[in-house]
Length: 357
Image 1: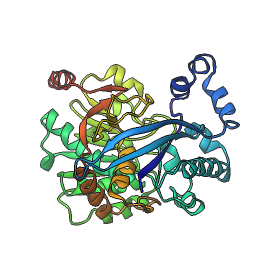
Image 2: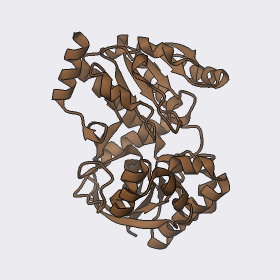
Image 3: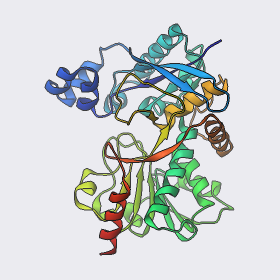
Image 4: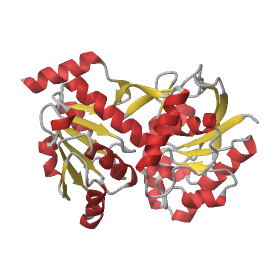
């Protein structure tokens, strides 16, 4: 039986993302008009994905992008059951196409109970891709730290959104690698639970509900579910590395415009093995994908058709397992990305120079 998968996408930047598929609508509609109209659009097949090929055993997988036309803001505005219904409708399209596993992208992975209800209502297994996202986020932070000359073992790190699924799992991994770790979130009780999970690591771990502590951090991972930016220029010290893994982004555009002395990255790009063709431009260079997409593909190549990463808890053993599976089939970190562009060594050199000044 063929290895097959499907992955759900949705518009995050309304005008730009709608414009990829419908250029005229992207030009003439306002974000609020898109929010309203998307309520009535059915899920649709965006493209077929060909050429995903394991470097381990030569096995190939075919997949499909299926769009759920809700923006993040619209998903938060609508009743949960309405959002579930449209995601499930997209899942039924995947089933009819012959997909054997379904990946939930961006906000479809966090709405409600993070995939559990969706999985119960479909006949194919579901994954959010969050386990491999955690693995790649930590790899990207380590790569960025090396590029900036920051020694991990003595670095001060912070996780914003540390009580969420990705934030908590990433915090546990970082606690074993850095010198100090600050956990930031809105609920003190949930932060204390994350701090307890980090016990026994290298780092001295503290918690806070105030973003002011970011001014002391060398490395920052931010992964909240906010619908607008939360990190501003005044929160960051010169030479800091900020990895923004949130969708929509947590880092304000003002940081990009005014802070040439900090390195902002929006996650790591994953190289997909084989001559992959997505037949759709989702903003990444050819052959590269988001980590959540890569988890779905790697599970298909491995033949692991099961509900893999769903719910609000991510087991770090599962993070290590999917990291091993992905590496075996040839998925790897393939550079850093920020503001829709690849981060170059020249950019990093300029940031280091500005920070030194």
